[in-house]
Length: 208
Image 1 (spheres, rainbow, N blue to C red):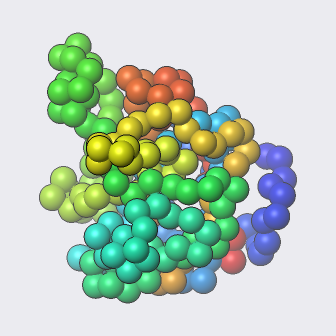
Image 2 (cartoon, rainbow, N blue to C red; image 1 turned 90 degrees about the vertical axis):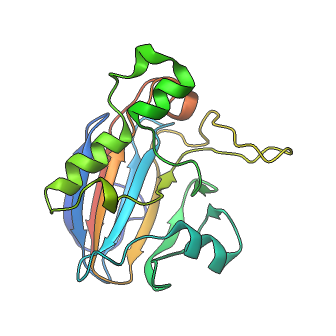
């Protein structure tokens, strides 16, 4: 695999996640996860659980309230439902990342895009598939982060899902502040522009 500019520390894990696929990995406190948008305009749906006690998990509400901003940028702290720091955005070559757009599901696809989409694979399916390997189910899903996804808030308060602001090779670096379990859906959505209507692979690199 090609070298990644600006990456520091020893690489302990390096993996390509195929288009539309789930991914789960444990990241230890102090390690850094780099997510690379290999081909550009690919949304990466993202959940976090404390490895020590997965009842402690990512909280969009606590994260947004603590920073007073709905977007994640360099320096943002991703917080748990206990208010604890889980990961910090060390750097990002994309200006901001979404916390409110949610994850696509077969049900939401049907509602938004028509009944003919119900059989299409969705992020909720990926999250369930990955979580089942560690005994978590649908009830353990919470609101997720969408890295590289562009979800602007319109003047009337509605949300837009528009073309992404990423490009091939852009990245985000996340430092674990506790031992965490990272669960990802490399978004399979093909009915709106969040993936440019063409889901593509991403690269996950963990350094220490």
